Length: 373
Image 1 (cartoon, one colour):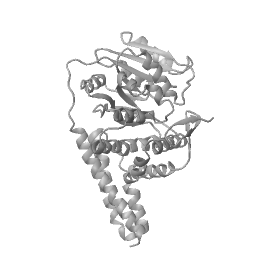
Image 2: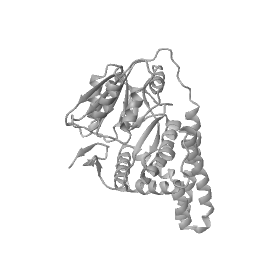
Image 3: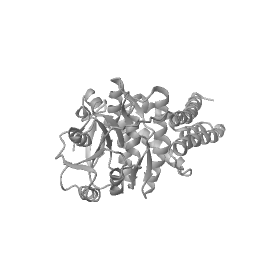
Image 4: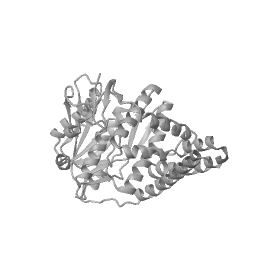
């Protein structure tokens, strides 16, 4: 065998080990202790809005229908022309007993418009415990009570919620949801198992206002595209307790065309590479099927490696999707998603610009970004 074959065989072996780690990390996550408390803290929910996502009303309604004893809902939109505002107003009329407010922020002075909306709501929030949640998130009625129970431990300052990706009708949405449920979540679980939680993921984060102030406030995140990761990293580095919550939310990713989905994936890849360079390089080991195909192309005698790769990839996918999230993967689509994921991972090494909500931004090596057009 030549050195290329040996190198690919070594990488595939590392990928198989990573699959084993994923299963063990999923087991560790499921067996963590859950907190119980008789008195649960009140919560302020912060919801940035920007247009009408698919299923927006049902998503927001799931927060109005929370069973928690004391909470408030804050919404932020750029101006009164935002199409999401009538949705919020209908829900406010339907649930008049729920404390809720709408804040019009105006044009954001920050590169990261979401951070500006969160910062404005942060200033208005009544309670110390915050839940910052995107508009495409849907939760169960007991969600806030479970979050408050997490924070009954005074050592916990920030909790990031894993999510179950729910696809829309487009095939690209279905493929992306497979990647989120079987690949992305695996990375979170393995990171937690090996080094602890030193990150946060954006769709839903709970945090104490006092802890966020201690790390510089939300305005400190205004220049970062991956503001969620930076928030969790800075909180952990400052010595605050950061956890991966047992509360799993639904991320309704909607239906996207191929072009829109490609822009979304490329934005995520380029952002991740700059936020976590070493971790991004290590994502090579999350692609056992692609590595086995490359190995077979280099030396066809290694064809049994594809069977091995499939078995271990299926075990890892089952652990995250079925065991943790409670959803069955689309097994026949998984190889297609894995190939797409590898293509976008490679593409993430190239280029310095992203397109976000119709605007083009330039990405700096440290994860900061600025508007170009």
